[in-house]
Length: 299
Image 1 (cartoon, rainbow, N blue to C red):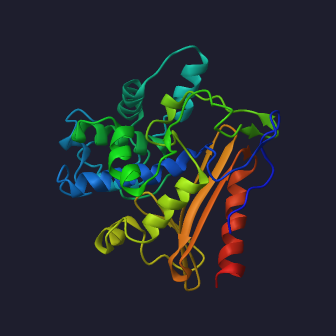
Image 2 (cartoon, rainbow, N blue to C red):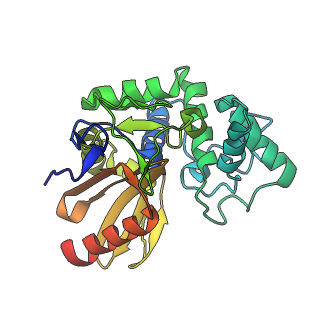
């Protein structure tokens, strides 16, 4: 079933559409994790167990933090988002390198939040660092690398690096608690949440992940294994929710006026793509949808 509800823009009466762009927020992390997997395929990294000091000898505690710790939010690296958003509001212009320096500065000043591998704490810093690693090792801009290695082979044609201001003719207007809100300094979300995409493109991407974009051995590394029933765990770029004998792999995203979730349930060959231009109590909405799917629709 493919269906749109409500308006993509209340001022212009633009209808929701499979080919209309939406900001996907942290669903972008699934693409970053896939790009790092492609680095491994290309021999640019030897494995997810390589530590950050191999790529930046000055990174604080870099000998303790593996690539897998970044992708599974087990690094203990502090979150940069509130710091850089406040700096932006105060008139500072920050790029990805500036933010990287903010992150390393936070670690140098206050240390890690926990010993890498001992805990899990969702953190955008992990994915900004991972995206910079893609650029450093490939010699190619992060978004271009994803274009060449993911979008082009899959025929994904309407997904792109998000812009600070949307094009109201091709992109849904975002609404935060009912008010228009679609302006955001996308440089602040580099690698962690800065893509715009369409329902059609996200369906193509999620179907590819569900089927054969990852090899079986890669899937064993990417997706959290042996998750107890009733629990959620995080793999390398994807959440795993287990309910009885049914497993759902998914990721969600929220960014100024937009809400998103993509996922799939292998047992039923089911793919779920939800892109919305209304951001309200989004975490609660996702939990309710997942519970409904696993408890009533697929069990």
